Length: 138
Length: 138
DNA sequence: AATATCAATGCAATGGAAGTGCAATTACTG
DNA sequence: CAGTAATTGCACTTCCATTGCATTGATATT
Image (cartoon, rainbow over all chains, first blue to last red):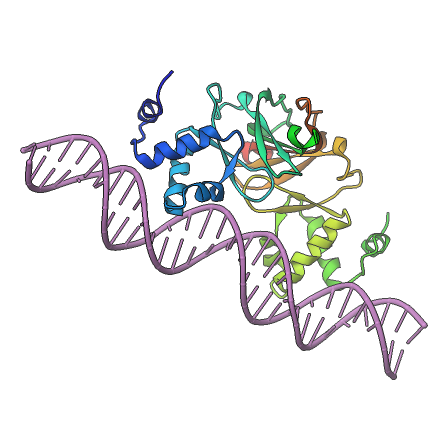
C-alpha cells in the first residue's frame, strides 16, 4: 500500500499540493467527472491548472479519459488492475440517461471484437447507456 | 429501388435542392463525415442549414450519429437494414488512428453486453480504433 | 545558504463546435 | 394567385478545450 506521494514519484510526477488534492478528489468520487466538476470542487484554483494536472495524470496512466457520448470529456482514476494501454484489459463504461452519471464497470471486461481482414484493432471504446442501479431502484 | 425524392417523401420530409445534394454527398462517401466536411463540400450554403438538414435526417432515421471519440460528431447514412433504434441491430464503428477516418462496419453487429444487476441497458456505442484496411496495406 | 534552473501555476486570450432567434425566402395549399 | 407554413441565411451566443506568456514555486548546484 503506497501513499499518493509515492505513487506520483514512481511515475516521475512532481508532488505538489494541488496534485495531491486533485488526486484525492478523484479517488473519493466513484464516478467519472468532468473538468467542470473538478473546477467546482476547487474554486480557488485556476481552470488551466486543473486541466493540465488531469492531462499530466492521463499521460502517466493515473487517470483515463472517457467519452460517454455527452460531448464532454470525463475522467476517472485508473484502478489497481487497470492497464489502460492493453486492449484486452479495457473495461466498459455505463452512462445513465437519467442521472447523467457515468461509472466504470471495472470488472466487466470488453469481449474480444472481431474486425474484418486488413483492419488492425488497437483499442476499443465501449459505452453502454441506460438506467443505472441507483435510478432503476426508484 | 426508390429515388431519393421518394425516400424523403416517405419520411415526411420536404424535398428541396439542398437536401437532395446533401443526401447524395452522404451517399457517395463511404465514411462518416463531420459537419465541417459537409461545410467544405458546400461552401455556398450556410452552416446552419447544413446543420439543421443533418439533424432532420437524423430525426427521421436517414442518418445516424457517430461518436468515435475524436470529440467531433460524425454522421453516416443508414443502410437498408440499419435499424438504428433497435439495440440488438447496432453495428460497430472503426476509427483509423492513421488517416483519421471512421467507417461503419455494418455487417459487424455488436455482441450482447451483460451489465450488472440493477443496470438497464438501452443503447450501446462501440468504437474500435486502430489501423484501417487502406492504411495497413501500405 | 544563495543562486541558477526548470517545472508548475495563474491569467488572458483564442479556436472550434454546437446551438438559437429572427428575418427573408422558398415551397406547398386552397 | 394569395395565404400559410416550412426552409434557409445571417448574426450571435455559449460551452468546452487549448495555448502563450509572465509569475511563482520547487529542486539542484555551488
